[in-house]
Amino acid sequence: MARVLIVGAGLTGSLCACLLRREMPDKVKLVVWDKARGSGGRMSTSRNPDNASSLVDLGAQYISASSYYAQSHRSFYEELLAHGVLEPLDAPVEGMLDKAGTINYVTPLGMSSIVKHFLKESAGAELFFNRHVTSLFQKGASWEVHRKGGEWEEFDAVVLTMPVPQILQLQGDLGKLLSASQKELLETVSYSSRYALGLFYPPAAHIDVPWAVNYVANNACIRYIAIDDRKRSRESPDCGPSMVVHTSVPFGLQHLEQDKEAVQPLILEELNKLLPGLPQPRSVKCHKWRYSQVLASVPDCPGQMTLHAKPPLVCGGDGFIHSNFDGCVESALRVFDVLKASL
Ligand SMILES: Cc1cc2nc3c(=O)[nH]c(=O)nc-3n(C[C@H](O)[C@H](O)[C@H](O)COP(=O)(O)OP(=O)(O)OC[C@H]3O[C@@H](n4cnc5c(N)ncnc54)[C@H](O)[C@@H]3O)c2cc1C
Ligand SMILES: *[C@@H]1O[C@H](CO)[C@@H](O)[C@H](O)[C@H]1NC(C)=O
Image (cartoon, rainbow, N blue to C red):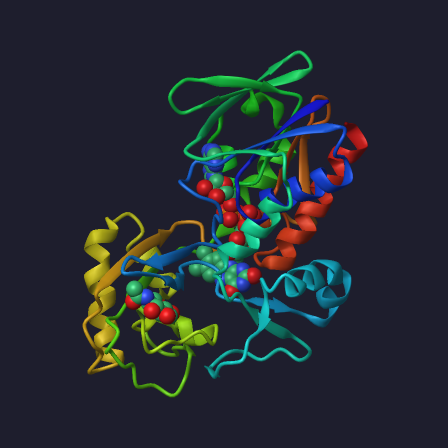
């Protein structure tokens, strides 16, 4: 059995794991490492510290299926709908660019539940958190993968799913394995940056706006506000409202190197100007997305890049296609094709 390491328990990594478990159960032994404390990656969901049934999606907000992908990724949509992971968006949205034929879905249990679903479907894969890969070395027919803390393990194949700049930061043999043209292509990939706030209000609080989601126009700081439990049609009087605020990309860039503790009050001040009379939140969570959405992906890329054929070292993720659910699904399918052909 080939020992395969998947680096990253975001959507791309977890779907790769799921496809490998489903299609090649007798051929691979799967290990997933993520540097974070939990799964989800940029499909990140936080819980209200006072009531775990109230959530905020700090990263991705909903799944938008174009008519093309609704068809070509139909089995994935059907699976997620059948398991209740996805539901059609049924709440008032202001200012969203409506694309003809696109269907929007929300996740009753938060966006990370999509990733958790695919990890659950990868039964048998060993999943480890707090494992931060720092370098890779080729040792004959295998990869020696080192992580923070100095420990290392050997694998027969490695899949990297972190944002491309973080792939380029890896030490070891990667520098000499990359061809000049691959390096050049990877260096063209760029991401937007933004901050996200998750706010939890006390049970009696009321947020008096006629929408669940608002794309804010003409504000230098704030680009997006969601009354998050309302977005997923799960508002309850027993638990206060939850809210998500995303900053604009220029604001994110301008404050990129500052501590989030210093930036959070600036965003809150702007929020209170936009929605005067807003109640006091009970708790606030601030997250800096240095790599938010892909602005420029690897040009003409079919969803993966094979850095080394034998032993396989394959990269995937939204940087190799485009930044949404269907981009990651497509990338996971292409990474799977490469591994299937080589293992
Ligand atoms: C603010 C925001 C809003 C968005 N809105 C939407 C939306 O509405 N709809 C939509 O479809 N998409 C949206 N997206 C994009 C979507 O979230 C991403 O395309 C998708 O989640 C990317 O998944 P991934 O698995 O490729 O990468 P990631 O989710 O980034 O996963 C990579 C994982 O690798 C881990 N990792 C990184 N480096 C290492 C290392 N050295 N060692 C070990 N682990 C490591 C990370 O912890 C992470 O868990 C949004 C993203 C953001 C940030
Ligand atoms: C938490 O919220 C749910 C509804 O979202 C509610 O039914 C429940 O009573 C709340 N629990 C507490 C401890 O407040």
